[in-house]
Image 1 (cartoon, rainbow, N blue to C red):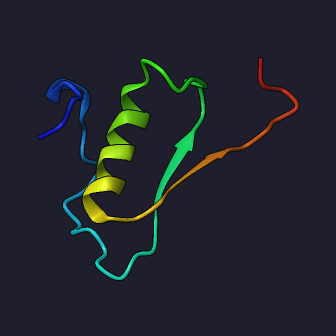
Image 2: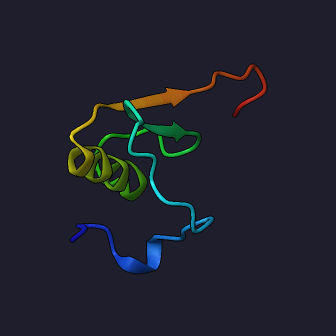
Length: 65
């Protein structure tokens, strides 16, 4: 069960999760906040479910507003 509203969850494919994975990756682009961030909350829930660490990546761009 997720704390994120189901309307916010959009699977991009039907590929099963990789059981041999070592982490869950969250690619942060716009919502640079730790509070009230449904995507980050969902990624953290998936990492906790898998018993794996959550890695957060933010790519710095010189032309980003």
